Length: 129
Image 1 (cartoon, rainbow, N blue to C red):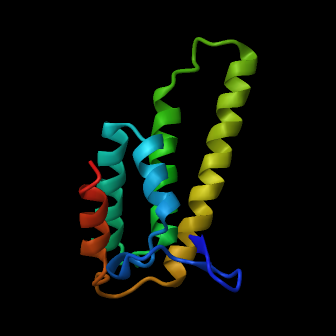
Image 2: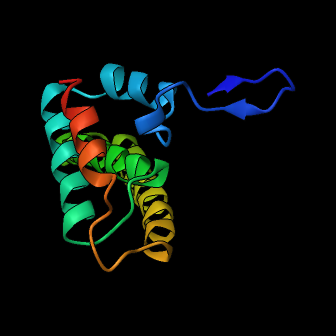
Image 3: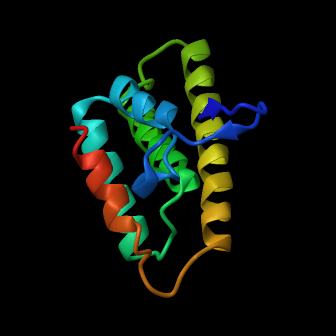
């Protein structure tokens, strides 16, 4: 988002992808590994086509945090110190809470047919791979 002349927040000039802020694109590129990006796209496609969720910023965050949860899950804390296990458990709990929040928002706007913008959403992030 950028600041408009009157101080309001506006979306970057991407008319066909107006629901995707520039910062989200940068976060996708910088924060996720290649396999996490593929996981993100798989979950996005599944959410759009099978669950009927709309293409939106909430969908982005839902898939993004699912990918981060997978990252945390891959970190083995079974042999770690007690404090490391506590951090891992609390991190997973926080991650699950955020995922649940975004999933609830998506469910509120769930559609009976796949969102027409869904293919654009997938295509946009696929081009960033």
